[in-house]
Image 1 (tube, helix red, strand yellow):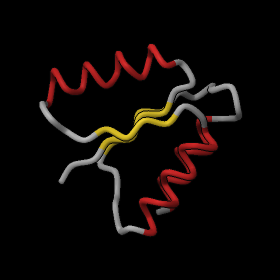
Image 2 (cartoon, helix red, strand yellow):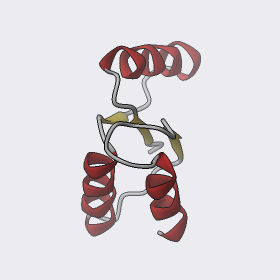
Image 3 (cartoon, helix red, strand yellow):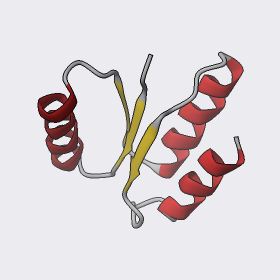
Length: 77
């Protein structure tokens, strides 16, 4: 099953991205993270459960760090 990770510290941006994905691709599960810390926790949990993400849309300048950290983490998995 396809999985998408959305990371943004702005709730409205997450809603907009998720809506656009659902409109474009239908019912694909989206996991939402409001921070880099939360995204890394989601990635760790998914890794432990054998789940991988097919697409990650990441805000590069969230409030708690660099979105590049989350991107790098997805690349290493």
